[in-house]
Length: 300
Image (tube, rainbow, N blue to C red; front, side, top):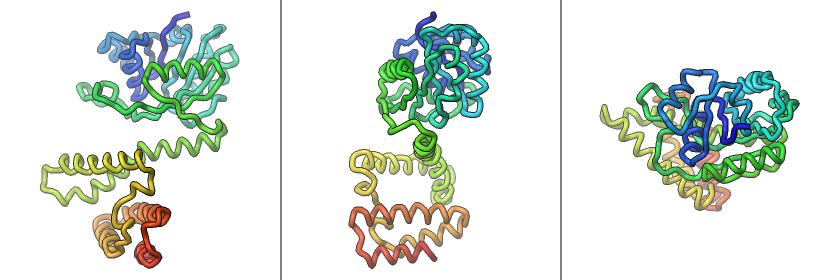
C-alpha cells in the first residue's frame, strides 16, 4: 500500500492542499478528472507526482477535493476499483456533505471521514497568474474540522499537524449542524468577498480614475484592522461606525447615497446596519433615544 497521501482534484482546494503538504515534506500523489491540469501542476512542482485513479485507490490515504455536486459520482468511481482497502482511509473535503456520500467506499472496507479546511481556495487563474497555493507569504494557521471513523479522524489529525493547522471541534455531525456551520463559513469567505464587491461599487467613483486599486487596498486594510479587533475582543466590543455611535443623520445620508447610486444595495446596507445596531445595544453603548432614532431611520 503506497504511503504519503493521494489527492484527487486539481482545482483551487486540491491545488493548495497538494502544494502545502508537499512543502511540509509529505509525499503527494495528485490526480484529477482534468488530467491536463493535474499533470501540468505536477510538472511545475517537483514535490508532486501525477497518479491515475487506480494508483490513488491503492494508497493508504485518499483525499477527495471535488465539488459537493461531484462527490457522490467520484466516490462511486473509486469504488469500482474493487479492492479491500485494509488500512485505507478516504476523506472528503466538503463542509456540507455527511459521510453517507462515501458509502460505496465504506462498503469495501475504507475508513471514511470528512476533512474540511477553513481556507480560501479560489479556482486557479490563467497561465502565469499567481494562485493561492503558490503564495509563499505568511498565513494565519488554518482551522480544520474532522468527522468519521476513528482511524479516519486520526489520519485527518496527522494532516492537520503536517499543515501546521488547528482542529475546530463541532458539537455534532447531523445535517442541521453541518448546514449552519457551512453557511457561516460560506459567509465568512464568499460573503465577505461579495460584500467587498458591493462596497467597491459604492465607492469606486469617489476616487480619481486609475486609483481603484488604491481604494481597494485602503478598504482591505480597514477590514483587516476590523478583523484583528474582532479576533482580539469579539464582535460587540470591536464594533465601530455611526450605527454604533447612534449618529442617525449619518445613517440617513448613507441610505440616500446608496439609493441614488444603486437601490438594489440598500437592503444590504439596511440589514447590516440593523445587525450593527443590535451589537451596539448588546454592549450597552447606546441610549434608548439614539437607538430609536437609528431604527426609525432604517425603517424609512
